[in-house]
Image (cartoon, rainbow, N blue to C red; front, top):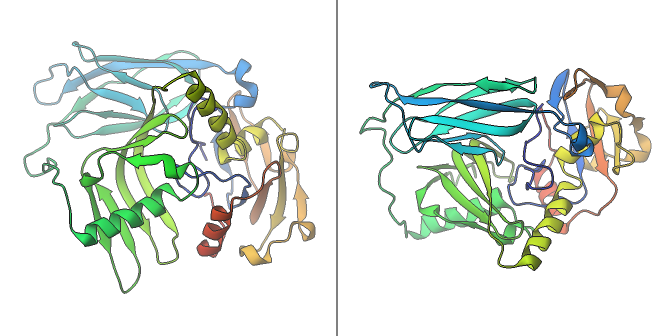
Length: 344
């Protein structure tokens, strides 16, 4: 399992409820993982963190000419580069780990590959992009004004962004590129974007560029989505807003899944406010921590390298963050889910 890699306390870490702008202040999380790896890009040990770099060239597939202006980024991070007039790119200061390297420019098929950076050295990755055919190019975005589309947009915003205080400050900047499918009989809902969806979060001070490949939700509000994204910092209006962003980013990080994995890798679970119990049950109403066996970090994890930790356990773990209380909106969401959030 790989936590989402944004610079420490810069990100809105994608929460365990899979909502980009949601804040979960008290985490009660069930995980079912047998022999999973997670890569501990660990803000608790930032001074020990080794970094690598990656570089390469992007060319046009048919002519083999270099492609300038191509965006190259590591998905779920703020690490982005643009190719120069020779088609070259370089991304520096990359914490060791495994990433999805994405290459995209309008008019060409997007390419991506999984890259593993396990030594503090430069690695080279070259890409050839194929031009899109007329049949596959995105049609020009048209403003959609039907009542049905507007209702689906509101449904999507609630399911995808959430309804927390932070989510209220998120804005979809180009919602017209979204297409929706809604089945009234089953309550199944799906969305996709014809292009890159732009999201601004004024509460935390960042923007998101998202290639939304798949988003689905069932009648109970259980959601799932897949896509590539990268983050950019917004410009604050003044120093006060910048300070407010930094405070909120830290608040969002605390108690997040990323925070939990960092604490687990550093064997600082209790110091960071996390308590783990083992359970065979998977219903919220059945979970009572006093009746469950406690689990220490050493019971379920062992280091593999300077940046990797392996976790292995049977059944489920209930993870509780004790340094905050649950937001009422999150409690309501959890009740709608009907079963715990699982990370697999």
